[in-house]
Image 1 (tube, one colour):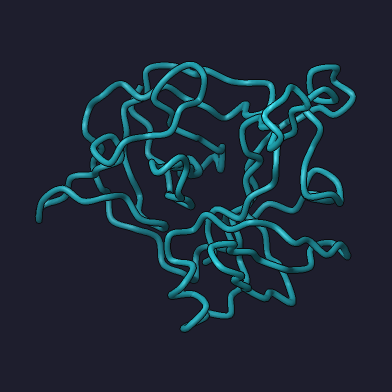
Image 2 (cartoon, one colour; image 1 turned 135 degrees about the vertical axis):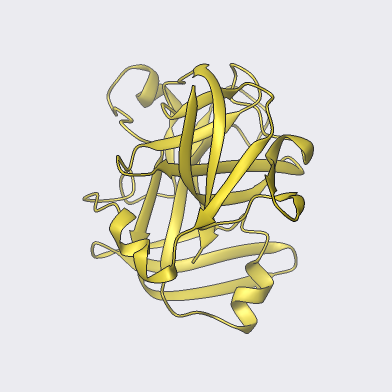
Length: 207
């Protein structure tokens, strides 16, 4: 299945890539993954081809990709398995067009910095989508050692979330001030190494 999406994230995940975007015209979120468990993409798997060569995909590019099939997880329903064919770049959207793709949820899966995975499994919390492109306010980018975080307000709630945008440092030095963020619900994880899993909220891209 050939699908053209606008890229809104190419962030760092386990030293690989987590790519996500919205289908042109329908605004449906797509997260291309490398296996049924939602694994990240290698450098080679997220290359796109244009008349000048092959390059890593970047936010706001329009990319035509061949997707094998949907492989949704209960915490990441947008996942689609890639076919292995190289992606094709189909120009890009202008920054003035970003507002056409914004989401307006009531909150970012609640007010905490995570969602308890057991609540997702029991359907106490139903994850209709694990990606949002939102207009934030009062954005502050902070760094403590290697800990990169975004503090911002959305829908009257203050969030303090880790950032996986590889352009974090550039955004700190030369902020664009649009305060548009791609926020993702990560895979299930227990920082203590046990079975008390949660899905942590992550700022994947700062636009």
